[in-house]
Amino acid sequence: MSFCQTCGTSLPDGSPACPACGASQGVAASSAEPGAMPGSVPGTMPSAVPAPLPAAGTGLTPNVAGALAYLVGAITGILFLVIDPFKADRFVRFHAFQSIFFNLVWIGFWIVWMIVGLMLGAISHGLFFIIQLPINLLITVGGFCLWAYLMYAAYQGKTFKLPVIGALAASQAGIATAGTGQRL
Image (cartoon, rainbow, N blue to C red; front, side):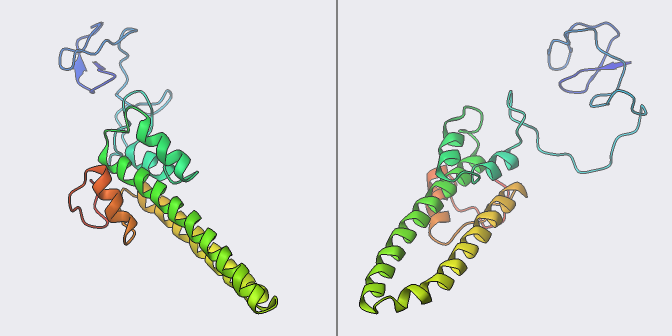
């Protein structure tokens, strides 16, 4: 017995197309089960929860695309807003917008913080520069941890919303009032 390579429906032997979904089977359909690897034991399937289906033609699932939207900040956020299969997915759009807004706020914060540091350093004759070094380290580590958590939450399929940025990203992505931690 052979199975459709697209939907997994059983096919008559030698059928060039699936009667259920109409997908062309290309080479004559094999007698292996759908998703079976060469050399695997027939009839055994893992009992794990099925993963989300990848977008057509990309091989990326929405949770991976959402996590990758944070990888290079605003650049990958914009990239996932214009890539065709993901620009219609509300989950990926939310994380792409949140990535863009988070990076814009992060860059703006550092600009303001450096200006304040320079002014206070000039007023205190360099004393604030010594105090500012460990503060900069803590802020940098905190920002890195938040960035890593946003990627992790997206990979887990959650929509963790940052306080102000998350609501703005949700409105831009077309999400009405989805709660924190829900899969869209």
